[in-house]
Structures are given as C-alpha cells and as structure tokens.
Length: 129
Picture 1 (tube, rainbow, N blue to C red):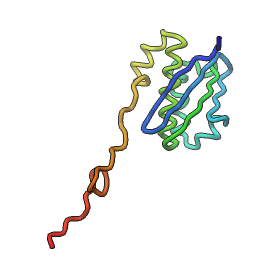
Picture 2 (picture 1 turned 90 degrees about the horizontal axis):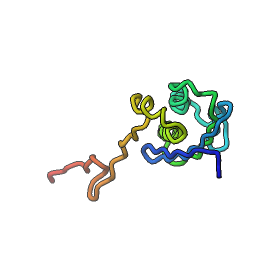
Picture 3 (picture 1 turned 60 degrees about the vertical axis):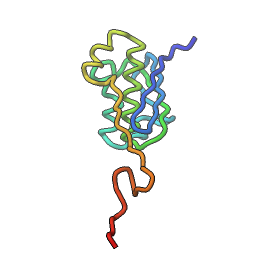
C-alpha cells in the first residue's frame, strides 16, 4: 500500500492531482520545483496557503500534476487539492481549513457562447437597415 495521500483540486478548467507524504517541505509541480513553475508571488502563496495556515509547511512533501487553464487557475486548483489531501491525512485539520474557506471549490466558470451571438453575452451589432 502507498504511503501517499491523494487530493483532487479543480478551478475553472484546471485540474490538479496532489500527493502528500511526510517529509521536509519540498513541493514539486509537474516535475519542477514550485518556484520555477509558478512565477508570481500570488500563485506561489496559493500553493503554500493551506500548509502555512496550519503551521505544517515543513512537515509534508507535495507532488502535483496539474493541467488546463492558466497559472492562476492552476494555483487555485493546487490549493484545493492540497487542502483535501491534508483532510484525508488528518481529520483534525478539516475544521480549521473549512473556516478559512480552503475546502470550498470556486464554482465560477467561463460562460458558454450561445448560437447566433458573438459571445456568451455579446451580440452582433444591430442594424435597422
């Protein structure tokens, strides 16, 4: 049996499959170190948020496979995946993570384009003659 704990996170069109294991605090995203993959401080902060709020950033190693969407959506998906994996690892974390809103999936998605229109909400310009 594997000693990894899995968590799945989604945001917009991004999907992150997260594995955590007791370790030294290393985070790998798609085979790269986390600071090399996520280039903005906001995205890096999202990935670490759940671990830092619980003061366990140096207790777990994290491996992530993420695809789809942009870097910000991917970091949000990783955040949810890490939080879900931590809850599977230790049920005591759930109350604190839920209170911080880290176990809630962001439901906002891009609205679909409708037929006969320019976009989701935009219409073609009206011409009377």
